[in-house]
Every structure is written in structure tokens, then in C-alpha cells.
Image (cartoon, rainbow, N blue to C red; front, side, top):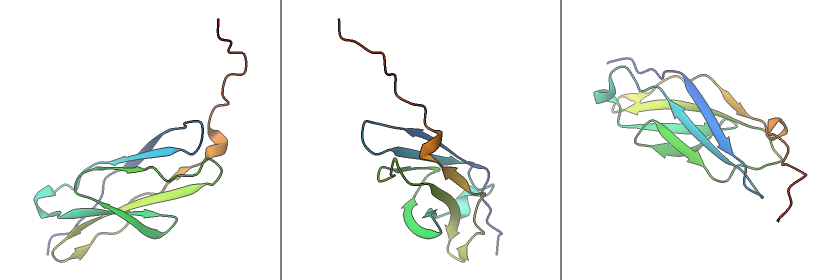
Length: 102
């Protein structure tokens, strides 16, 4: 059995007028031929799957903190979870307040 591992996990986000979109990306498993998919966990619960090294959470809330981890999956099982990344909407920049339509 080959050991599965996940490289560094990171996130980017966009904040439309309502809600938020969290984009996750991670370094691939060092033996990608053994990986059949990746599982994404949100707040400790299996949230979705990805066949590649990216995932988008379009259901993120602009008022709730969310944590994410990822595991690699192959025919023999699932890897340990990646590092945890946190989406904290309180850290979003405030929208500009001095915009005017000319």
C-alpha cells in the first residue's frame, strides 16, 4: 500500500454583495497516479469531492467562519487530513463607502 498525503492547502475568496465564494487549492499528492479523488471537509464534515486539486464552495456564508481540510482517496483508502484553512468573513475588507455615479 502506498501512503497518500496532501500537500499544503490554501484558499482564496470573493465576496459578492451577498454570500461569499471560497476557492480551495492544494498541492497534489506526490504519487498522483494513485489518487482517484480528493474529499473536501467543511467544519469537519464531508462536504464535496474533487477529481483535481481545486474546489469551490459557492455556499459559504458572509457571516459565518468556516474551516476546510482535504484528503486524498485511492483504492486502498483515505489519507490523513491536510492542514486546516479558515475562512473568516470578519477579515474581509469593508466595501468602499465613497463611490458615486457621475
